[in-house]
Image 1 (spheres, helix red, strand yellow):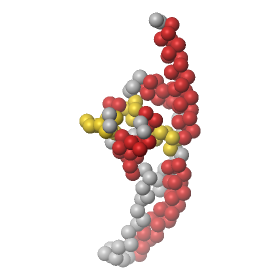
Image 2 (tube, rainbow, N blue to C red):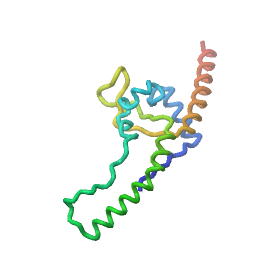
Image 3 (cartoon, rainbow, N blue to C red):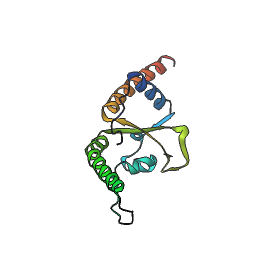
Image 4 (cartoon, rainbow, N blue to C red):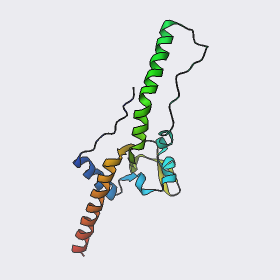
Length: 145
């Protein structure tokens, strides 16, 4: 069975993420239009697709072991479906380090062959922290002018 649970980010992890995004070291799905997310973060193209049910092909030699494996695979597939759907509904944003971008881009955005997933709750916390950090940095810059 797959692990269909979001990692809960600590306060420190989110602070590091905020700093890295502000300093343009990390690119997030919040920085591009929603219709481009699957093109910028290539793994996102496969997030919504359902895994296929185990094959019912008659080519396999029918043995007790094959039948048992097939039954177990069907049970796992059916048990995972609600967890997988809940996981997908709870995705808040995707991100990746800019250094991992591919050699080509799309519509002026980088393209990534890997990404990290952040839950909706952690994304809300991230946005609040980012706004606070952005205001703090702007105030700091004003003092130095």
